[in-house]
Image (cartoon, rainbow, N blue to C red; front, top):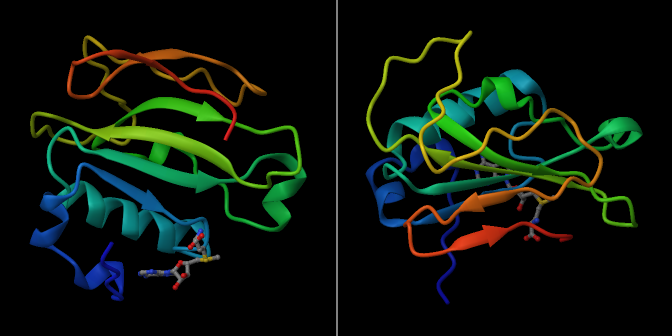
Length: 142
Ligand SMILES: C[S@@+](CC[C@H](N)C(=O)[O-])C[C@H]1O[C@@H](n2cnc3c(N)ncnc32)[C@H](O)[C@@H]1O
């Protein structure tokens, strides 16, 4: 395993080399900063790559910023999970659009093979297709 240390805003074309990117909850301490990071990732990530964002829900938002799925322009939201145990962070799993599109803030793209997660469900389990089309996956407690 290789560790690189860098400000994510300085990482550009190399992001295309990764199938999955995990975004820690505290990358972007408020929604403005987080939105800038998300738009940066939308610009440089490989088409079809997965972005997994750590988020928060309810009173846990006092500790960590909440990722609003409506600001994930350029991504399909596949699933949102809010744990009800001692795990603090929620998880938002999204996939970068395969085709470049014009991003309209009032519009979230859905394509065949993806499901838009219903908003803020508590511990919802939803099936979604594997991004590379090989198999079905179901998200579960993390
Ligand atoms: C609370 S820690 C999460 C650690 C992570 N969950 C783990 O288990 O290793 C937040 C991490 O986000 C990193 N971070 C914050 N802003 C960043 C940025 N702009 N670019 C790269 N990393 C950033 C911090 O350096 C820190 O390691």
